[in-house]
Image 1 (spheres, helix red, strand yellow):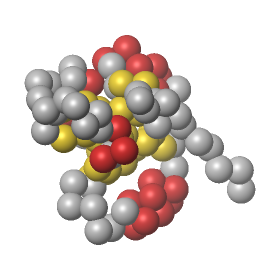
Image 2: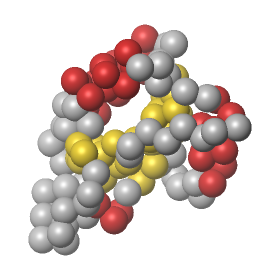
Image 3: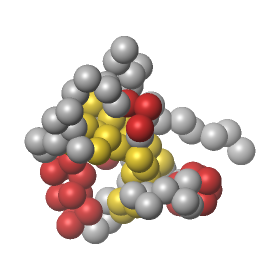
Length: 104
């Protein structure tokens, strides 16, 4: 069964950036694995945020995930890394979670 999430693409990443999402939390996503596909080494889930507090809260919830990371769009090298992930390199799948804006 396919996960109900979209694969990250360059177009989707640019749309998120243009809409003010500047923080992206990466986490392992074993639920995205199709057990029959032996070519996939790792699967990740990227969650976009506008608010650093919300991104940090997410990061703390996944503190034991050894593959966790927060990409910050104000660093050009971080955008380059996200674009690499969006290219879906061989052996990897990178999904994006729908953005959720928490009302305060």
